[in-house]
Length: 327
Ligand SMILES: CC(=O)SCCNC(=O)CCNC(=O)[C@H](O)C(C)(C)COP(=O)(O)OP(=O)(O)OC[C@H]1O[C@@H](n2cnc3c(N)ncnc32)[C@H](O)[C@@H]1OP(=O)(O)O
Ligand SMILES: N[C@@H](CCO)C(=O)O
Image (cartoon, rainbow, N blue to C red; front, side, top):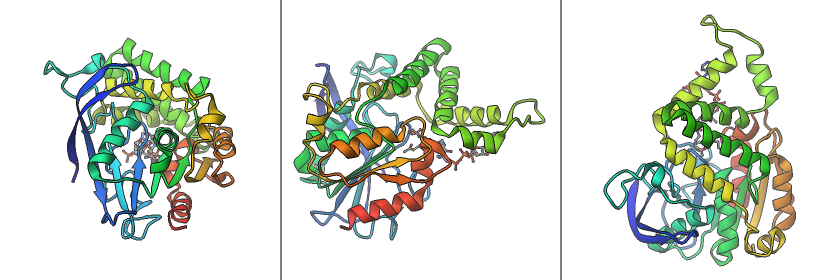
C-alpha cells in the first residue's frame, strides 16, 4: 500500500525552492533497527518493487535475493516522477499542474528528497542502497554524499556520470517530445529508448527482417507496442524532467573530479555490468569498480537482452544481491 508522505520544502541544487515536497513510498518486511535496504528504481519505474505487480518481483520478496523475511525494504518514487512523488504531473503552488514549468532537478536533488524520507522514517544508516540504471546513479550519489549512512552499495548497469552518448539519446528524446507533442512524442521517444535498452543481436535474433501481415516490420510493431504502453502509464513532461536529471549526473562535479568523489565511498560495494549492454557499456561499471576503494572486482551478468538485463536476469542479479546483503 503506497504512502504519500509530505516532507516540507526542498531547496534544489539550482537554488529554487520546491514547495511542499511529497514522496510516495512502499515498504516490505519489518524494521529491526539495522536491516533497512533502499531499492531505487530506474527511469520509468515506481515504488512497487515486490509483489505481483512489482517491477523486480523475482528479486525482492520472501526468500528471494533481497529477502523481505530478513530485510526491511523501502522503495520510493523518484523526485520528478509521476507515480505519487512530486513531479511535473503534480499540482504546482498555483493549483495548476506543473507540466513543463517544473523546475530543473538533478540526481543530487533526487537523493536529497530520498534523504528527507529516510529521516522521516527514522533510518540512520542503510544496510544497503541498491539501484540499476538511473537507480544506480542515485545509489552512487547516496554513497558519495552520505558515506556514513550507506553500509553496502549495489550498482547495476549504471555509471559515475552520463556519457556523451547517453546525453545524446536522452536529449534527442526530449526534443522529439517537445516537437511532436506529449503523446506522439513520448511514443516515439520510448521506441528509440527501448531500442537502446536491448542488444543488436537480440533484435536480429528475435525479429530479423520479418514483416507482419499488417505490413509492419515485426521489430517496428514491437517498438510501437512498447511506445503505446508507456504513453498509457507515463507523463511526458516527467519523462523529460527525469532525462534532464540523468544528464546532470556526474559524481565528480564540484568535488575535485571522479577519483576524489568516488574515493569518499566507504560502503562495501558490488558493481555489476550486463555484458550485452550498449547503453551503459561495461567500461562504465569497470570505472566505478576501479575508483571505489571498497568495491569488489567487477561482476558480470551474462545476458542476451542488453541494458534491460538488469530487469530480466533475476537469478543472477538476485544472487549478487544476496551475497552482498548477507555478508
Ligand atoms: C525499474 C524499472 O525500470 S521499472 C520499468 C520497467 N518496465 C518497463 O520499462 C516496461 C517496458 N518493458 C520493458 O522494458 C521490458 O518489456 C521488460 C524489461 C519489463 C521485460 O522484458 P521482456 O520480458 O524481454 O519483454 P519484451 O521486451 O519481449 O516485451 C514483451 C511485450 O512485447 C510484445 N511483443 C513482442 N513482439 C511483438 C511484436 N512483434 N509486435 C507487438 N508487440 C510485440 C509482447 O506481446 C509483450 O507485450 P506485453 O508486455 O504487453 O505483454
Ligand atoms: N526499462 C527501464 C530501462 C531504463 O533503465 C525503464 O524504463 O525504466
